[in-house]
Image (cartoon, rainbow, N blue to C red; front, side, top):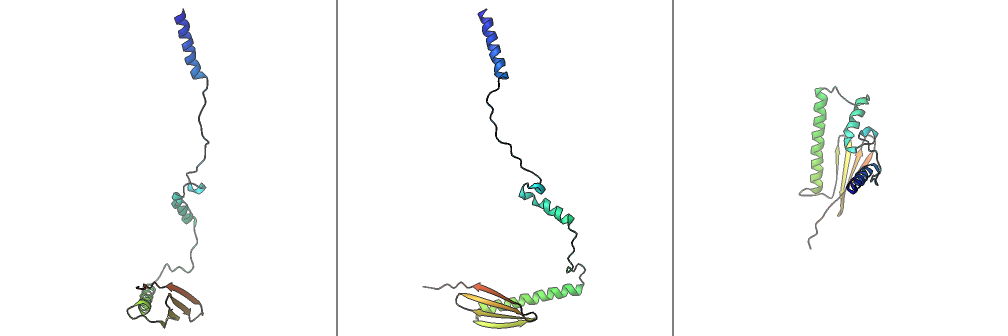
Length: 145
Protein backbone atom coordinates (compact mmCIF):
# COMPACT_ATOMS: atom_id res chain seq x y z
CA UNK A 1 0.00 0.00 0.00
CA UNK A 2 2.84 2.35 0.81
CA UNK A 3 4.47 1.49 -2.51
CA UNK A 4 1.30 2.43 -4.31
CA UNK A 5 1.01 5.71 -2.47
CA UNK A 6 4.66 6.44 -3.21
CA UNK A 7 4.09 5.71 -6.88
CA UNK A 8 0.96 7.90 -6.90
CA UNK A 9 2.87 10.78 -5.24
CA UNK A 10 5.73 10.41 -7.73
CA UNK A 11 3.30 10.34 -10.65
CA UNK A 12 1.48 13.38 -9.27
CA UNK A 13 4.81 15.24 -8.84
CA UNK A 14 5.77 14.35 -12.38
CA UNK A 15 2.47 15.60 -13.78
CA UNK A 16 2.63 18.78 -11.68
CA UNK A 17 6.14 19.54 -12.91
CA UNK A 18 4.77 19.68 -16.45
CA UNK A 19 1.63 21.57 -15.52
CA UNK A 20 3.04 24.16 -13.09
CA UNK A 21 4.86 26.88 -15.02
CA UNK A 22 8.44 27.53 -14.14
CA UNK A 23 10.21 30.84 -14.49
CA UNK A 24 10.68 31.67 -18.18
CA UNK A 25 13.70 33.40 -19.70
CA UNK A 26 13.02 35.81 -22.56
CA UNK A 27 14.35 38.95 -24.18
CA UNK A 28 12.73 41.88 -25.92
CA UNK A 29 11.62 41.29 -29.48
CA UNK A 30 13.10 43.82 -31.86
CA UNK A 31 11.92 44.38 -35.39
CA UNK A 32 14.64 44.59 -38.01
CA UNK A 33 13.43 45.09 -41.56
CA UNK A 34 15.06 43.13 -44.34
CA UNK A 35 13.77 45.22 -47.24
CA UNK A 36 16.14 48.20 -47.78
CA UNK A 37 13.16 50.30 -48.86
CA UNK A 38 12.05 50.27 -45.23
CA UNK A 39 15.42 50.91 -43.61
CA UNK A 40 16.91 47.44 -43.80
CA UNK A 41 20.50 46.43 -44.30
CA UNK A 42 22.42 49.24 -46.05
CA UNK A 43 24.44 46.68 -47.99
CA UNK A 44 21.26 46.00 -49.98
CA UNK A 45 21.33 49.57 -51.37
CA UNK A 46 21.72 48.26 -54.91
CA UNK A 47 18.04 47.40 -54.64
CA UNK A 48 17.17 51.06 -53.95
CA UNK A 49 19.42 52.27 -56.76
CA UNK A 50 17.74 49.86 -59.17
CA UNK A 51 14.30 51.12 -58.17
CA UNK A 52 15.39 54.76 -58.52
CA UNK A 53 16.92 54.15 -61.96
CA UNK A 54 13.80 52.32 -63.12
CA UNK A 55 11.63 55.29 -62.13
CA UNK A 56 13.99 57.97 -63.46
CA UNK A 57 12.72 59.37 -66.75
CA UNK A 58 14.89 62.52 -66.73
CA UNK A 59 16.97 63.04 -69.85
CA UNK A 60 19.90 65.45 -69.68
CA UNK A 61 19.44 68.04 -72.42
CA UNK A 62 23.22 68.50 -72.68
CA UNK A 63 23.86 64.79 -73.19
CA UNK A 64 25.05 63.93 -76.66
CA UNK A 65 23.80 60.43 -77.22
CA UNK A 66 24.02 60.70 -81.00
CA UNK A 67 27.56 62.00 -81.43
CA UNK A 68 29.07 61.94 -84.86
CA UNK A 69 32.49 60.48 -85.54
CA UNK A 70 33.86 64.02 -85.99
CA UNK A 71 32.59 65.05 -82.53
CA UNK A 72 34.12 62.00 -80.90
CA UNK A 73 37.43 62.63 -82.68
CA UNK A 74 37.44 66.31 -81.63
CA UNK A 75 36.84 65.41 -77.97
CA UNK A 76 39.60 62.79 -78.01
CA UNK A 77 42.02 65.19 -79.69
CA UNK A 78 41.23 67.91 -77.16
CA UNK A 79 41.76 65.43 -74.33
CA UNK A 80 45.17 64.40 -75.71
CA UNK A 81 46.25 68.03 -76.20
CA UNK A 82 45.24 68.96 -72.66
CA UNK A 83 47.08 65.90 -71.35
CA UNK A 84 50.25 66.92 -73.22
CA UNK A 85 49.92 70.47 -71.93
CA UNK A 86 49.55 69.29 -68.35
CA UNK A 87 52.67 67.13 -68.78
CA UNK A 88 54.62 70.17 -70.01
CA UNK A 89 53.45 72.23 -67.03
CA UNK A 90 54.46 69.49 -64.58
CA UNK A 91 57.88 69.23 -66.26
CA UNK A 92 58.31 73.04 -66.07
CA UNK A 93 57.49 73.02 -62.36
CA UNK A 94 58.98 69.74 -61.11
CA UNK A 95 61.22 68.51 -63.98
CA UNK A 96 64.99 68.35 -64.34
CA UNK A 97 65.27 72.13 -64.77
CA UNK A 98 62.39 73.52 -62.64
CA UNK A 99 61.35 77.12 -63.19
CA UNK A 100 60.36 79.52 -60.40
CA UNK A 101 57.44 81.00 -62.34
CA UNK A 102 55.86 80.95 -65.76
CA UNK A 103 52.81 81.62 -67.89
CA UNK A 104 51.23 79.32 -70.45
CA UNK A 105 48.26 80.24 -72.66
CA UNK A 106 46.21 77.59 -74.39
CA UNK A 107 42.70 77.48 -75.85
CA UNK A 108 41.32 80.59 -74.13
CA UNK A 109 42.94 79.82 -70.77
CA UNK A 110 45.99 81.34 -69.14
CA UNK A 111 47.89 79.28 -66.59
CA UNK A 112 50.31 81.07 -64.26
CA UNK A 113 52.50 79.18 -61.82
CA UNK A 114 54.71 80.47 -59.03
CA UNK A 115 57.07 78.19 -57.14
CA UNK A 116 58.10 79.00 -53.56
CA UNK A 117 60.03 77.00 -50.98
CA UNK A 118 56.92 75.37 -49.51
CA UNK A 119 54.34 75.32 -52.31
CA UNK A 120 53.52 75.80 -55.97
CA UNK A 121 50.57 78.07 -56.75
CA UNK A 122 48.73 77.52 -60.04
CA UNK A 123 46.31 80.21 -61.20
CA UNK A 124 44.07 79.22 -64.11
CA UNK A 125 42.20 82.12 -65.73
CA UNK A 126 39.45 81.66 -68.31
CA UNK A 127 40.07 84.45 -70.81
CA UNK A 128 36.44 84.49 -72.01
CA UNK A 129 34.66 84.73 -68.65
CA UNK A 130 37.45 85.96 -66.36
CA UNK A 131 36.82 83.08 -63.98
CA UNK A 132 39.89 82.30 -61.85
CA UNK A 133 40.77 78.96 -60.27
CA UNK A 134 43.68 78.74 -57.84
CA UNK A 135 45.39 75.47 -56.94
CA UNK A 136 48.02 75.33 -54.20
CA UNK A 137 50.33 72.29 -54.25
CA UNK A 138 52.63 71.74 -51.26
CA UNK A 139 56.20 70.80 -52.11
CA UNK A 140 58.06 68.28 -50.06
CA UNK A 141 61.69 69.22 -49.95
CA UNK A 142 64.15 66.87 -48.29
CA UNK A 143 66.76 68.95 -46.53
CA UNK A 144 69.95 66.97 -46.01
CA UNK A 145 71.60 67.61 -42.60
